[in-house]
Length: 162
Length: 156
Image (cartoon, rainbow over all chains, first blue to last red):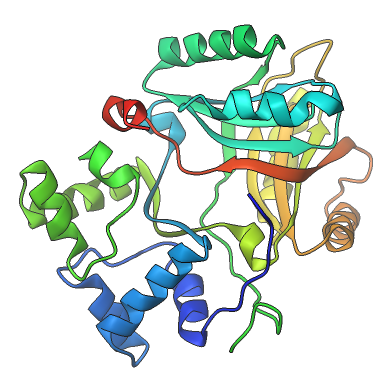
C-alpha cells in the first residue's frame, strides 16, 4: 500500500466530511446527497467511483462493532526487522486479518483479527503462530471508552481543490 | 444480509435494491435491517470508510499507557474527551512482555504534529506522570473492514 497524496474535487471533500456516518438509507441515496450539495446524482456517483479508484474510499458501508458482530482481537508479533515484510505477507494471507501495520517497537507487527466466534479466532491465532514461527501477543479489547466515528479531514492545498 | 453488505454498497443509483436482488429480499428489508443494526449498535457507523493515508494523514500513532488499575476509568475519560484521540480502549496486560493497559490512537499529517498534540494533551489532562510509549506506524500492510461471515471469508 503506497502512501500518496491525491487531489480531490470540492464535492468529494464535502462528501467525505459529511458522510463518514449517517449515509442515507433511502431509495436513491446518491440523489439525496446531490440535492444537499446542489449537484446531480451522476456527479455524486462519479465522485464515489473516483474516490474508489484513487483508493481513498475503502468502502461505502458499515463499520461493525467487533464485540457484537463476532470475536476480534488486537495482536502483535516481535519480528526481526529484516524479516518483517516477509512475515507481514504471511499474516496478510489470513482472511481473518483486516488491519496489519508495522510499528516502532520490539513488538513491531500489529494486526487485528476477526472471526465468527472465539474458537475460530483462537484457531486463527494458533495458525498464525505456527505459520510465522512467532508467538502473538494477544490483546483483546476489554472496554471501549471512545470509538471511531470517522474524523473530520482538514483539506489543504496539497489535498485541496482542483 | 451480513455478507452482502460487509464489503460495502455497490456504487449504483439504487444500491439497496441491488443488494436486495442479490439476496432475494426486498429493498425495504435491507434498509430496515441496516437501520435496526445501527440502533442496536451492531453497526457502529454507516458511511464512507476512508484510507486516511491517502489524504496525507500518514502519521498514525498508537499511544499505550501503563495506568494503575484503580485509575484506568478516570484516565480513559480524560483521553476520550481529547479532540485528537480517535479511539481509546482498555486491554489486558500480558506480563512480563507487555505492561500497558490503556490504548489510544492519534492521527496526524506528520510525526511532529502528533507529538505536539500528545504533549499538549499531557499538560492539560493530568496525564504527565503516567508511563507511556508512542508506537508510530511506519507501514500499512493491510487496512480493510472485518470479515465475519463465512461466505465472504472463503470467497477472498
